[in-house]
Length: 210
Image (cartoon, rainbow, N blue to C red; front, top):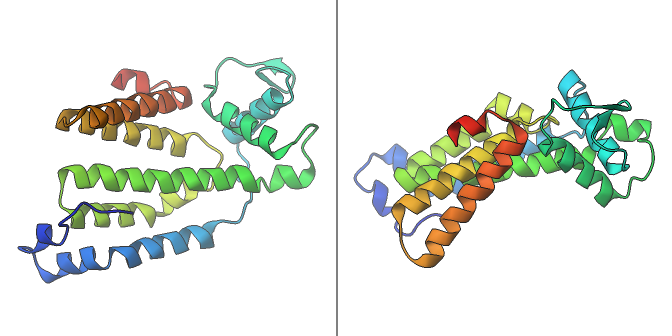
């Protein structure tokens, strides 16, 4: 993760602990990455909602429409089923899932882990936009070592993509408020729109934020 220039100068008036955090940020992030590697096992934590998302995604991938166990479904938002369907297409699954694919969806969970890493990066950029670098490092490391965050990074649920969408939207909004050149404004607007759309297709509650 890259830092803004002069990060050391931002903590020169602070105590030795804060300077240590900034200087050792790479090792803190390596520790977070190690926890993610140790937590990853590619196993599916069976649940009602995750079963629904996987069933809808598989039906979409097979060209059977937005159905669960052969029946049309209109309650679950389409974001995660579409993501799971795209993964099945890329993996070349053209028939019923095998027992191993059902219980060990390695690729879908790996995608969730990547989404979690992108969320951490976005959180780091968002916090460093408003606060000193040491606080951005500490918040990111604390979030990355939180057991609930790591648990959601290994589940086929909407929590992690929804969080990434919100963080991207806030980051884009912050960039727009800062202003700058045309390129920066376009970047901020793109992040705001992409983040809002991602969050919206995962959960309808983001519409209140909009």
